Image (cartoon, rainbow, N blue to C red; front, side, top):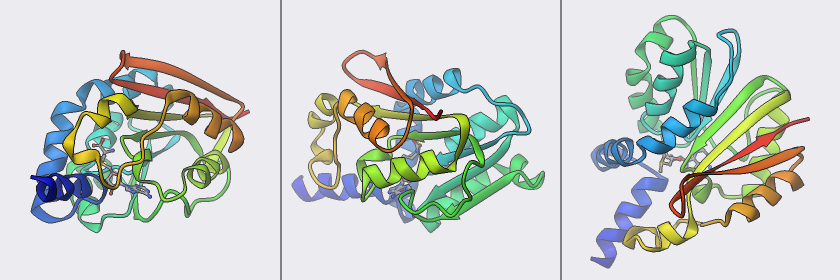
Length: 205
Ligand SMILES: C[S@@+](CC[C@H](N)C(=O)[O-])C[C@H]1O[C@@H](n2cnc3c(N)ncnc32)[C@H](O)[C@@H]1O
């Protein structure tokens, strides 16, 4: 059971092949309140550029596309997830509004100040250098831009058998402070399901 749980945990952080596909489908089902929370908070115009960190199979990107039709960017280290996300976001791809990169959010390949908003759902646990990732996101946001960082609480994750290896968990306040150190002017914590998941909303001055 230990090995299987570790294998599943690794798939969440680094989804690949058929197992990665299954893990993403499961995530899409159980994480709906988290995607909904991100969408409800987003304020963007069609001409804006938005970046989703760790887009997985593109579930949130497609929801954002349906709601706002903006310029959609994403970065994720998994080549397999890029294939799935392009397939899922067909309309944006056809209209030339989808730009997905295989890479790491701690070294973003974008110029300064280009995004109106950045989203991340359940990815911060896997960033190799969380403070560097925050600095990079802040650098790429325009003035007044917002980063929505959606995640599960440490208490919730610690109950699950597959989060023992490869997950770094955070307290809300710790993540808020990390963002302020990385250059954000404001960091506000909003609960989604109390005790289970939350969003940290960071605003750049
Ligand atoms: C638990 S999945 C979440 C996928 C998607 N955000 C969702 O909620 O459906 C975590 C995702 O983060 C990606 N990821 C892991 N490390 C990353 C990094 N350093 N930078 C960007 N994405 C990363 C993984 O490849 C994976 O697709």
